[in-house]
Image (tube, rainbow, N blue to C red):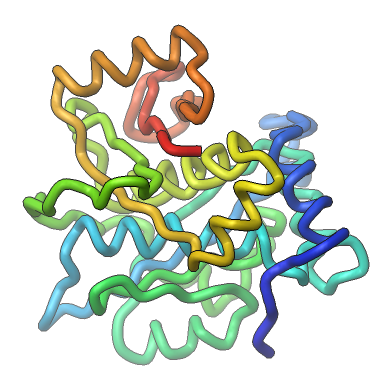
Length: 249
């Protein structure tokens, strides 16, 4: 089943809910309350993807789930999606290739391809009740060499990654996905509608120390259109780390 992007009242709800952010209802000591959004990265062994377009595909896939009409009230994805937002909006990235990747397409979600690199974001749910077609996929083994993409096109929202944290591709995919959500939350309702009409363009780029210092200063000043992901520190990075900063919202 292919869904359409939300419009009208459905988009109003999607935008309001992104602006509201996490309700924080998850109790980490009670596994039954923990929700996550699975992300699967297509990583064929013979022709591995490039790091940057793969992360851009992951970020856009998460964004498109969040503005899919099926997550709005009355839609078939509404309850699991709203329950995830009520928790902590965790994301867990896995890798797949060959038959694994083709099978993953059968599970409810949205696939995005950028320059031939593909990622799929799925309908969130209880972390211990993940679809077995996804649960058997490996979480590790998502390392890719850093590439050298060109500067982002002017006017395109950018999700900047702190290179100094040396995150795996899987960890970075989860972080840029959350960055995409914060990016949309920073947009006005009109701006969000225009961005969707343009095809939800965004770029992901690594940030060196000098640019990161400028970005974090903009976060401290609460500049409009700038939002940072503060990681809870469950994996790879220290609690409270700024992992990505989204600009252009």
